[in-house]
Image 1 (cartoon, helix red, strand yellow):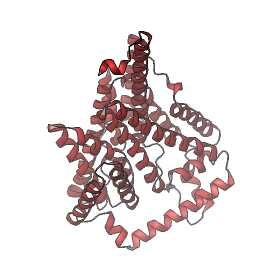
Image 2 (cartoon, helix red, strand yellow):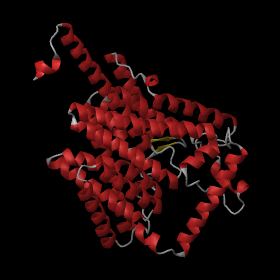
Image 3 (cartoon, helix red, strand yellow):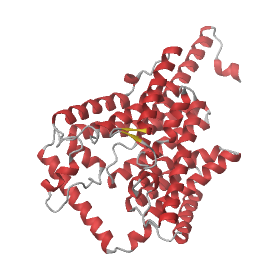
Image 4 (cartoon, helix red, strand yellow):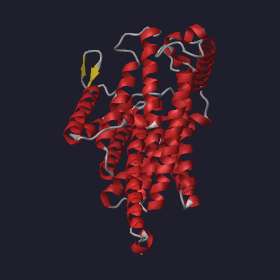
Amino acid sequence: MIRVYYLLLLLMPFWNYPRLPKFGETWTVIKLVGLAAVLAAALHAFLNGSKARLLEWTESRCFLLLLIWAFISASTISRWEWAENPLTSCISVAAYLYPTMIFLSTLDAIHRACYYIVFSMLLASYSVFSQFVKYNVGRPGGVVGDPNYYALVAVTVLPLCLLLWAGAKGLARKLLGLTALMIVASILLGASRGGFLSLVFCLLYLGWQSRRRLAVLAASGLTVFVLDFLLPHSSLDRLRQQDNATKISTEIRKQLLEAGWAMVKDHPLTGVGLGMHKPMAPQYNPALRAGALGHNTYLEVAAELGVPALAIFVAILSTAWVRARRTASWFEASGNQFAAQIARALEAGIASYAVAALFLSAQFAKQLWTLVWLGLALARIAAQQQHERSAVLVEHEAFDEPYVSRQA
């Protein structure tokens, strides 16, 4: 049954892939697989007596609160057809939570899940180059459909590739190294300025966390420099050469930020309604046309759902980041470097998303939420191991036999 969940992870970047069939206006292959994963998790939990215990974690409680908030906003304020309403994206994100907490109950299962996520990004990065070579797309977004969105999801997964690579061997090491290189190269080829800045942050973050700080930072800088030289164009070209299209894009972003800020000032508590930023932007800034994204996740959340919803969203990110750091520290202290590397990757991935989200509206990016839920599953295992270790210590103390001395 867990294979359905792994398939869901594999399909994550393909939500805009046109070759996947659709069933009506609402149902896609990914949504059907997500529904199947939820049902499989429920059956697995029934047969094995396992429980997700979703309300035990701050992140999941805040997310459920945000989901209820979004549902109320969509039902009372928004004016969208159901098939187009972003509420369906909220629900699809929730579909990753329950199966994750049911299926990923061991480090081995989490390890496999990480490799499925990595392999999905290998396929996505290949599609970027394929789109550029076959169809001569200037700024390819691959299966994701947009170079900016692709850069965000790619930079969120990149730490998993790099940190798992450090402890991998054989074919797994080659796969992780190839995927990391493909991700960096495809982000540069997509020429997303925000994506490049978040990539730089991600590499700096990982380098600063490394014990061989200078060597890692130097290798990262050299890799970006060489790829920039080899690729026909890159993000650095758009930063160095401000052509008319780039200047227009920059001006639109500024106008969108002004419109979003005006929405926040006008409706600070409730926002203008879930999914209503795009159609209402021209009303708050006549220089804009309808259908433009906010290009800032935090501002768009505040504009659509209000400042309280933004506080909940930021609380989820910050809590997940802190939890990943603490989980990594505990595993490092207990000598489990493999689990610690996964936790550090989750920490860096969430931090990289937080930076990339400044340049794009991506509150429903499934890669982010999957990393958050993986962090909960990993923290639960750490808590279980800590409880078992404490129980062993208490048992040995009851017999006046120090556990540490006996292990020695």
